[in-house]
Image (cartoon, rainbow, N blue to C red; front, side, top):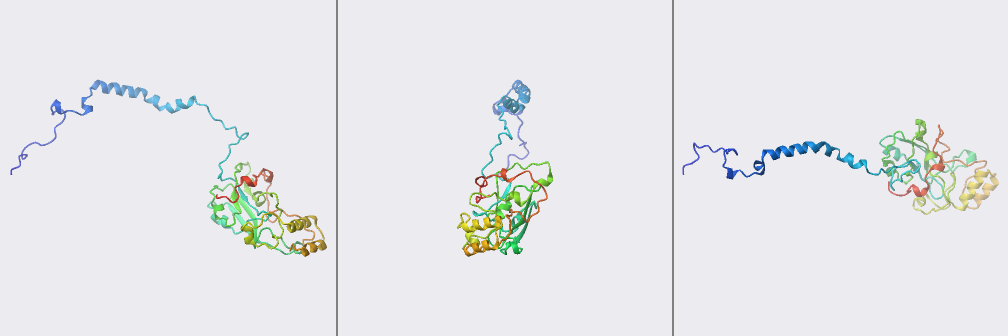
Length: 286
């Protein structure tokens, strides 16, 4: 069958070439005057619409935060200043493994571990600061580098390092923003004693992490009292005979938790300003 389109113009017709009955799109039915009117109105109100957000907020009541008189409460899982936690009897949880320092992406943590020494202090012993073999002798966090990411507390195997809700860390001296162990170590709570002192009688390191130790024992209290009082060898030998297992500490005085670490600066943040244990979420996920 022959093709009837051969030699004929089959290109589509323009709207001007079509009959009036075939022109049916809305744009082609509008008049030129309507187009010009709407374009004028849109140009007139366009600047006003651009300032609509500004005009809408000009007359709203502004919620002013009265800081520092009324500081805003932080979220329950807020990442603030770090804290080195203690066991219920006062021994430190940090074992000086340095995993937090390796996990820190900003290289803001410095840890130096040391061995616990049960040798009598009058014979050159350094005492016991944590259950097990080692403890964190030096612990520093440089808050000029810290980004508060929380990776360090996730890497801690003993839950020794957590983050508090304390965030007021600004200072006009860069040296004071390098916090040492004496600042980071949690303050003593009820039932705790200041190290060094031996572990609870009959307890091992795993017993501490299993929650079997709930407070300092009477033998530990007697050891610390004798240590601070500087009693003679006979009294300390009597403590050993009572089953405390405490080494002789003739003439020893009470040592703070950061006795072996250097404290090059005086810091503005004191222990009295530290948050309480209930505010630190110790044992909670970071």
